[in-house]
Image (tube, one colour):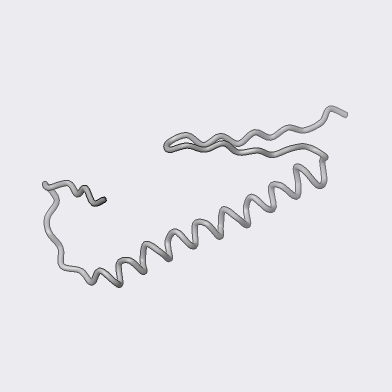
Length: 70
């Protein structure tokens, strides 16, 4: 669904090119998140025997890192 602010000025664009922009931005964000989370998991879970969980809903993402007491 498209819900544009009617007060914004109109622009002439190539839809296909802009779709490629959005796809690339999302793909890069996902890749960066996958690599960052893999590193965090390796450190917390594999090296420190802890746990790493995430809960997420629109506007609210929480990461829970638990490390064992030594």
